[in-house]
Image 1 (cartoon, rainbow, N blue to C red):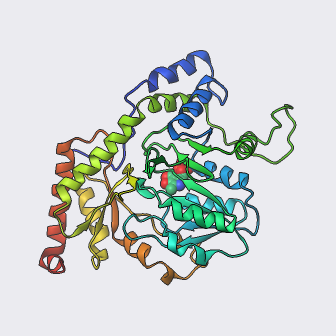
Image 2: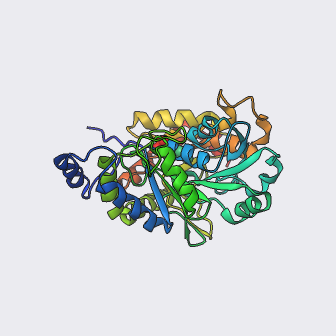
Length: 380
Ligand SMILES: Cc1ncc(COP(=O)(O)O)c(C=O)c1O
């Protein structure tokens, strides 16, 4: 039988089952219980932050962080146009407007040089996204934020463990958010986390996460909050994942290095980089087809699928999606328009073996040979 390679598979090879069974046996299955505190403390220790606050997913993490930073109706928040839609949607949940910025062509992250021209009197803050696991160039962005009195939230949904100049992502901005969805480097099934060193922001996030209930007075709600809590069972899975977090990260890097080894000599493709100041955790291994070949991208994905190899297109830029496309002009984003049309993510999970990646790469090359023929090669 033909082997199937999905893009992502969660790897649950530690104490996940044991800890979840403990929750079931003890009946601590809701959002109270010892695993929540343990998971939050362990996550904060890993990122080197004072606080880590768990929540129901990476989207609610963004919503809580934006609210805690005071984002409200009429504000603008600057975000990269190359991101998952949750980054933009969370801004809109607050009644604010996302303002999109193009990417650098090397790291695919928001280009710091393009940010200042997007700042208006309504701008409240910036969300950076460490896309596909490569950290954003944070120093210039923190400098711009200081100069203009803006907050910076790191959307680190895809980048737990990535480092910027030796510092953990999640510890650099004023706060940071993580996703723990099943395809992420570590997972709790669904889940999210917010890290910060700011006591006031942390208190506000805890308040809003738990329906706005006054921590000193049960059933007293001084503000309108949300039920965005994580369950003890999810935190139990998270604790088990955290015990092996270095292994999970190493596997993503190992897989990306294998793609590098088998594909780097193929001039039809561009592969992800790792800047000298970065540790890229390669949440998703990626390939970008050569310029001028966007007509082949979806065909390549289709033909790989026929061979049992799943892939997914790079995110469609936010400025092209129906809810957002009226906001800004298409021509403001030449880099992302190109990357997004030519890029795809390939199977990236930690249990892929060398032979698996070799097989996937052989198929990628074969599909390109067949699709492009001489015409494709002539353009190299
Ligand atoms: C950059 C980014 N932000 C936010 C999210 C949202 O996280 P979740 O799916 O846990 O709500 C994701 C999820 O994939 C993401 O990639």
